[in-house]
Length: 205
Image (cartoon, rainbow, N blue to C red; front, side, top):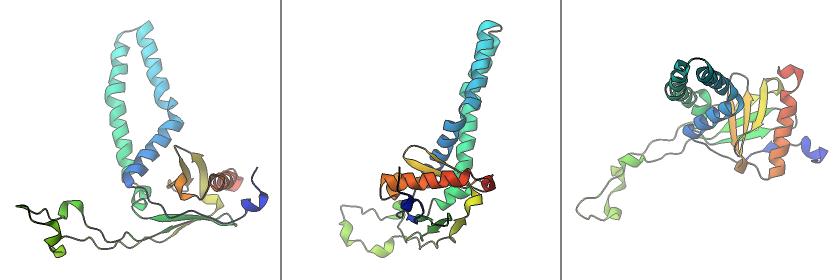
């Protein structure tokens, strides 16, 4: 068991960043991993009814599997990709869990960058180094949003999912923190255990 002194310390993650695509993929995978039976059980029931009673239900089952489920999956991925959490995923961020059980997310600005499709491609064998850099379009720095702060009653759950810690906060916001953002596996474990305790408190319901 972890040392009790570690359970009350402030835990700071390293600065990390996940793309909106990864955020959407992990959010959808996390949901389907928890509630897969809501999709599987009706399909099994339809297929069983079709086998034993009416073969036309086999066609209905095929329509559900090959038409409805891909459509719902695409809609769910699109919703996750345009969610508030996906927009926050654009920014480098750092998560802090204080000794008073307050979860804070601090964002850093997106630094200036050059889009890939705007880089000059020399023709006729021209040397790339001789091309002036002012021909490139540089996107300016994007200011960071204000920090987010969640008290114990605004943390709903904390689960593990594919080398990530997924924290569900009030309002439907998910924090997806990769294991590499923690200094060690024990720190990640303590972080998750403290959040689980907060989520189980009656005030967090």
